[in-house]
Image 1: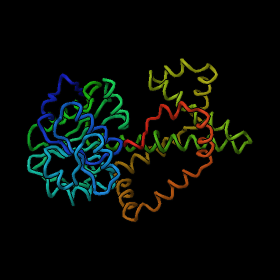
Image 2: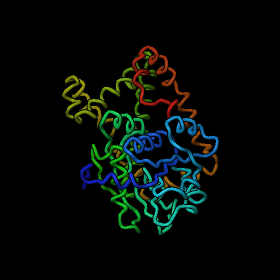
Image 3: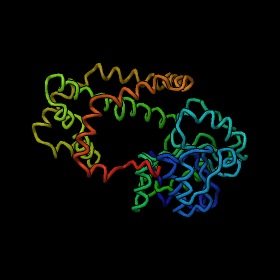
Image 4: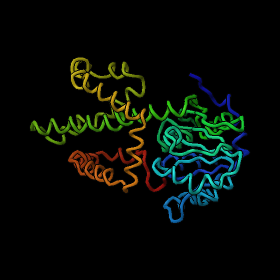
Amino acid sequence: MRVYYDRDADVNLIKGKKVAVVGYGSQGHAHANNLKDSGVKEVVVALRKGSAGVAKAEAAGLPVLDAAAAAKWADVVMVLTPDEGQGDLYREHLGPTMRSGAALAFAHGLNIHFNLIEPRSDIDVFMIAPKGPGHTVRSEYQRGGGVPCLVAVAQNPSGNALEVALSYASAIGGGRAGIIETTFKEECETDLFGEQTVLCGGLVELMKAGYETLVAAGYAPEMAYFECVHEVKLIVDLIYEGGIANMNYSVSNTAEYGEYVSGPRVIDQGVREAMKEVLADIQSGRFARQWMLENKVNQTSFKAMRRQTGEHPIEQVGEKLRAMMPWIAKNRLVDKSRN
């Protein structure tokens, strides 16, 4: 595995280019502001007319253009909009106007890896994927640090796509922590798998199942929430800080013993087989096709599942308990007023 740092990147490469950041959400606001603060003098944000992000970008001192105009103007076009709309965005606005020799960049490999976008052969295509949410990419940069990034190149007609990508990654703070070389395939498939089986899908279902089991057995919902949801942060923070061994060092012997004897009963061979099935669906493109079809029917099932999750009792109990802990809101990661 090749890892690059600021010393391996020439940040002046990106400083000499016109950069269009398409989208001003979590990642978009971080990339655009970090680039500007690193001395990239020509940065614009591409947004549709009427977007709530327009006022936020302009308040940060960033010019705003529509996508087609930004693509025509830019040397580097970084696409940071939701995956499901990127194909149409490229076909209708970016691809027809991008200049020959420009670079098209992404923070996730889905659309390129699964051929939902087929970029013109005369443009570079690379990926810079920070391994953290945009809010952290921004806050770590502001405090003088950085979030590790992945870098990959899919097309390189210019011959220097990797050099420009490394320069871009350095300018958003990635070179301070490390820029890890990968491929669009590896990033995309591992990212989808991690989200679905562990980070989002697996963890959320595990917490809900634990909560529901305790409540059904007659325990107070508040106790179930504390034990199955609230304390997850403590455990994850300990693992984040120093690995599983660090967590086990910090918890009681009783908790550690319970991990060894009961964990495999919950995450058993049946779960592992289900994980393999999920991975096979990702690798074959079945999940990507299913997600794109969902978007063709206005995300009907997706929105219903989102609503059902929001109405789960675990959310109602959690809202009440979090109100008792004002430090959570004080130290929040997500500030919807800014991004």
